[in-house]
Image (tube, rainbow, N blue to C red; front, side, top):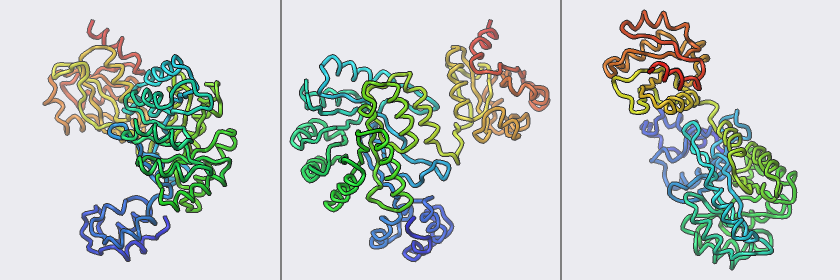
Length: 449
């Protein structure tokens, strides 16, 4: 951060009211300086103090909002170059590309295909969140009509790839309320495109023949008062796009150059036109280094499953384990008379186990223990998933008072806990379950039979 804690403290109200959650104004100031808290958490800063501090304490990368309602998403806002330093903030978004140079059948196939990949992994919805609507040199269909078709795909944010100001204005007339991105400003047209984007109240994408031209165009737009921008890394080569993405991020975060501190668009659909495997590889590369939006020609399950898994791993806070709330989770209509199974609160374990239990169709109660967000074997080795911790959790949650069934299935990997758990939980029949979640379906059906 540009300011130290003492600089912020000098302008603070010095009330020590604790309303922000910190014991003193000095403690609050130190947390703001380190990026752990936002200045807005204190309601007592004067307007003059806020004005002087807000810019200096803001993240080096500007946070840009696009979309509306449930489709609203944040881009940028990053504070570190490497995930292990703290955490990445706004996950990479993926866009499927359509172009008015395509015929109607190809457009319909591409748009319908954009909605096919839509699934949940560890509590997060996985789908292509955006549609890139490009205006080609040899148009076969009306661009505004194409924008209308793309806008009809529910829950997607549009990116309008068009450099003609008049055509951009016509396209925005049919979709500006959904807060799309207008990606079309460059050194030759930035004033006209800025006027169109500002009037419509949308984010403006900036491109150029190289990094220097992009930088100069962004600086010129900032002088015009527009800081609602994204940077298009270009389509001349993968090397050039990669260099721009990395150099701009490093300049923003290490050097504090806020003119470089905007989210980026990487158009893999053009960089590797017609090569879906190379596009998937580029999407993986720029998910890590540092694409805010990556555009591909199409998104199928073969591409999505590894790509979204990678994204979820990278954009998980390394300082916070992925965990679910401990408690009782009835599955398949489970009630007080249904069999109980127990496991840890590691999110991946929960979603894998609950998915297999749902697939079995057997009514049951999944009891999630507080194991610090660790996996079964890791929490067992750390002493957080033991006979004592399970018995204590059952007592604290009054499981016996809520559930009449006295059968409890343990994960097979901790079968060693069975004897001790029977001694600590008299009246319960402890059953050792399978070692792998995928075996639960057969296990439960065999128990029923």
